[in-house]
Amino acid sequence: MKKIIYLVMSAVLFFTACGSSKRVVVKEEALPSWYAQPPLSNAKELYAVGDGKDKQEAITNALTLLLSTLSVSISSKQSAKTVVREGTYHNSSDATYVNETQSEIQKISVTNYELLKSEKLGFKHYAVLVKVDKKKFFDGLKRELAQKFQLIESQEKNISDKNALAQLAFYKKSLNSLENLQNTLAVMSVLQTSFNTKVFLEKYEKIQKKHDKLLQSISFWVDANYKALASPIAKGLSAKKLMIKKLNNQKHFRVYVNADIKRASAYGFTLARSNITIKTKDAHSNVIATNSINLIGQSSQGYSIAKQDLVKKLNKLIQKEGIAKVLNLDIN
Image (cartoon, rainbow, N blue to C red; front, side):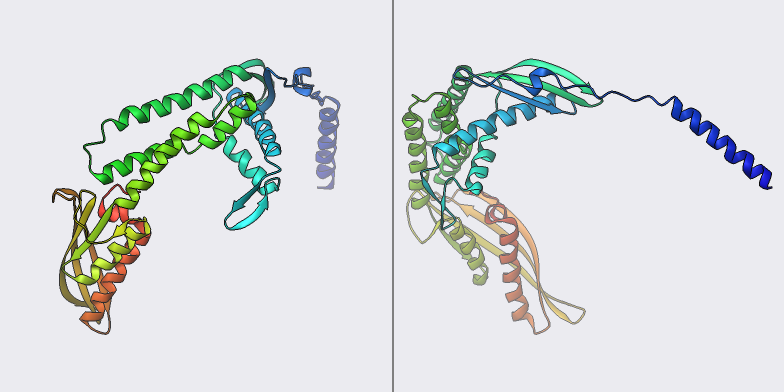
């Protein structure tokens, strides 16, 4: 037995020695010179390198790096200013603010880049060098903004016959489409120092004022056959900064809550089973939204407490789903 073990161990050592003598050492491939020392950005062009598991990821990383350099430039320009963040004063050169600026700037897409170099460095490893012409980049951003405003202006012509909520939804959607305006203008100002942002800012402020004026003039009133159910609806509308008041004008809306409540019992609890139908009407009594909800209130202390629990359930549903979804109404 010892002899067999000795022979096996000898064989293992022999093959191990043979294997080690034939081991191939793979020489690490040197990085391309253009990657190790990329061209420096100048007054006309921006350069950046990037790597990734494939060519597209490498390009994305290169463009992200390129935008990061722009955001650092923007942050350094704003370093003398003071900004307010959630009620607390911070110097704009703080890391938090710089990081916020960088993350916002990186949302801007760069489509007119030029791929100068691309090389596969190994398994799932690519490196690229990209160039962006500053003027072309600036012109592309300016054209994109101009197109957005032109689209808003053309669509605005078709909303005059809509009700106030539909108009409000339009202006809200328009503002959302321009949410990155400030950062885009900041990048454009870095790309072209003589650029005047006034024209675009004035157009944005005009849309914002129309939205705010509508929001302040729209009113709601809520009626319910079980009056306690009106309160959660009114509270949800108020949270959207919508006025709750009985008025008689073109911008007034009325919400009708009809609850079909049935008394029941189960496992020692008294239940208030309900089917709640909600209708929203405009100033001309046209139904503009409807919804139907099934809720169950319960209590071990009687039917009246079970109905109170039903109100709490509606309130929780509004908090969870949002008043817009509960009313089936576009007021986001």
